Every structure is written in structure tokens, then in C-alpha cells.
Amino acid sequence: MYNYNYTEVVDMGYEAAIVNKSSLTILSPNPVKCLHRDFNYSQYQSTVVTEWDLVCERRALYSTTQSVLMMGDMLGTLIMGWLIDLVGRRAVARVSSLFYFLTAILVIGSPGVTLYIIMKAITAAMDSGLYLSVFIILMETSATRHRAAMGTLFVIPWALGYMLVPGIAYILKENWRWLQLAYSLPTTLFIVYFIWLPESPRWLITQSRFQEALKILKWTAKVNNKTLPPDNVILDAMTYTEKQNLERSEKQEEEPKERCSEKCEEENEAKEKICQRSGEEDGEELKESYDSRVMKVMRHFFILLLNPHLRLRTLVIFFGFFSASMVYYGVSLNATNLGTDPYLYVFLGGLLEIPSYLLMWPMMVFVGRKKSLAVLYFTCAACIFSVMALMLIQPNGKLIQPQGQILLYGPRNESSISRGRTQRYEGKSGHITVEDKTDYKANKEFKEAVWEQLEDFRIEEEEKSL
Image 1 (cartoon, helix red, strand yellow):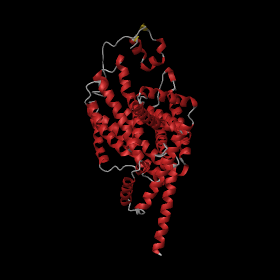
Image 2 (cartoon, rainbow, N blue to C red):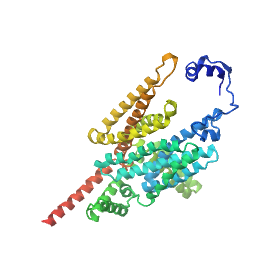
Image 3 (cartoon, rainbow, N blue to C red):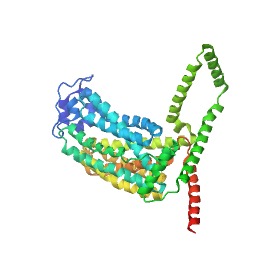
Image 4 (cartoon, rainbow, N blue to C red):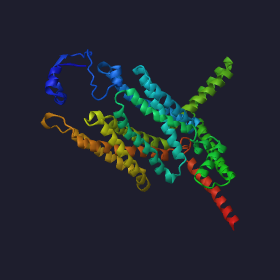
């Protein structure tokens, strides 16, 4: 810490000292170590800060315990997003739920801050994989006209859990480990994913696993009391779609080879001559096989940026999520700095998310995603500037924060950005679907193929009835 004359700070008062920081007397130009700790136990008896002494020169570790969640979320999104397409939605959901439970328990028993930070990062990554995989399954198994409703109902439990957090924290504020245990217990319900969670039929079709996709479609029809066309009709539609996808993928792979420059060809010829002279043809074949696998993996990572059609949409979605996340988590994590009751602030934030999600449903149906997002972002910006204006009022040389207005506008700001953030998820699923990463026309062709087959089936049924 800086070696100020803290007697002056006490005499001036905290708020005045912050405003007039430049006038304080500095006893030493260099920061000094804290010699004594005097924690305030009036509100919390045991926290990670008090247990591991995360103050003064160790304060950066406390900030790391918070920022590592976002880092884990980012890494989880990148890695799990690729795995979701590679091994399937259900497999990622199962593995993520298992490791989420295990790492959450390990967080409770962490003997030191280092293991605590690592486990928090892994937990955040698993949470990202779990959320993405389940959300994608929901969107890919829902009809287009029902996706707005499904997306809304999917996030309502998030708001309910948000509201419960301050209540649990108030009851178990004596020990952070008991609090972490209470937050981790609901993860035991993830066992239902190992029993009832189906795989996405869309993904199974892209993997040529038609029988498995048909089995899930039959189960879905049975649950919803619907009748499917004959198996051969559905399988023919799946086969037709897979054939179109294969032809298009082969065409896309041939295009880069056709555009290969003379320099590339010369380099390839030189490599072949070297291999022939050294007698390492077999080794070179293995290397090429390995290189091709690496390039295939990299192509999965960068396909959204390599395809001109998807690049613009991807960048727009990236920017939308970036701005929404900054505001959403900035407001959520800033409760202690606003001088308000943190329990009430967090509870109101969760409470206002419920009507915001319910309002999002009709907005997407009747107004559309783009216009709704524009309105929500402008509303959020207005609330942010309102809070900034309130916080900059400085009567009598002191910075004051009107508590009622901040409690009103702060959660309202979060309400607007919550709708925008959730619409980003649904908008993303609408703009970039399971087949967009290889060909964005696949869904349209699949629908056309299925429609043709179903139309023939309908005509045959009508002729039989006559």
C-alpha cells in the first residue's frame, strides 16, 4: 500500500479523501508492505480474503479469483464449441456436467488459493460447455416457430437461481466453504442428463447416423402424440441431404487446391524430390496424414472467419456478446462498489430478469430480433448514462450516490441487457446453425427435401382414404 499520512485520511473522512487524494501527505514515495491486518468480521465471518490473506500486496490474487471465471468461460467456449461439433452435443453435456460437479466439490476443499483459482477456471469452462451443448440441443430440436418460447423458458431458471443466491449467502455467511457447498449441491441434478438427454437429430444426420436420428425422432413423436411418415421417407430425406453436403464439402476442399500458386507447386515438387532421395516416402505419408488432421482441426476453429457469408455474422455476434457481457457482469459484480445493500441489489437484479425474459418472447415474435436488439441496447445505454449522472453529483465537495435511484436504474439496466444477451444466444442459433459451419444452405435443402417427401406421403394417404 502507499504510505500516506492516514491520520489525515481519518480526519478528512473516506469520501473527501478519495476526492482530494492529491492533497494527502505521502510519507514515502514507494509502496510499503502491510504490517498488520485488521479484518472486519461484522458481516462475513470467513471468506477467501480473510482465510488466505488476499489484501495489500496479495490483493491481485483476489481479483484473479474473479477474472479467472471469465477466462475459463472464454476457453470453455472455444474448446467446447469445437468438441460439440466433433463428438456431439450430448457427449459434451455429459462430460461437462460430471467435471462441473467434481471441480465444484474440489473448490470447497481447496487448501490454498492457487488450487482454488485453477478449480474455479475449470468449473467455468465446464459450465460454458454444459450451457452451450444443452442450449444447442434445445434449439435444434425445436421448431422454428417455437424457438423464441423455448429460449425464454430455458433462461427463466437462471433468474430464479439468481434470486436465491443472496438469500443463501445471507444464511451461510459465516463460512465461505459452506456457502460454496450450498451452491454446488444442485449440480447433483445433472444426473438426468445421463438418463433422458437425447442427442441432436440434426447433428446425427450430419454424421450419417440416420438410424439413431430416426430413433430419436420416433421417440419425440411419441412423447408429443404425433405421427411420423414411414421410415423410408425420412431416411430418403436424410440421405439426400447428406449427399448434397458431401458434394459441397468436396467442392470446397478442391477450391483451395485449384487456387494454389506456382510457388506452392514448386515447393511441393522440391519436397517430393527430397523424400525420394532420402527414401522416406512412408514417413512423409505419415507426416502428411498428421498435417491433414491438424489442418482439419484448425479449419473447424476458423471456418466462421474463412467463409465470407459467416464472417460478417460472426463478427457482429462477437461484438454484441462483448458489449453485453461487459455491461451484464459489470453491473452484477459492481454491487459492493455502489454503496447499496448487496443482498437487495442482487435479488432485484434476478427479479427483474424474469419480466425481461418474458417480454423478450413477444418482442422476437412480433418485432423481430434485429429491431428488438436495437431497442434493448439503446435502453441499456440510457440507464447506464443515468447511473453515471447520479454518481457524479457532488454537493458539498463529496461524491454521493442516491441509493433509491441506483437500486432502481442499476437492475433496470441489467434487465435490458439480460434480454439483449439472451436474444444474442437465440439470434446466434438462428444465424449460425449446425450446418452453417460447412454450408449455410444445408438446412434449407433439408427442409425442401423433407417437404417433398412429406407431400408425396400426404397425397398417398389421401388417395388411400378415397
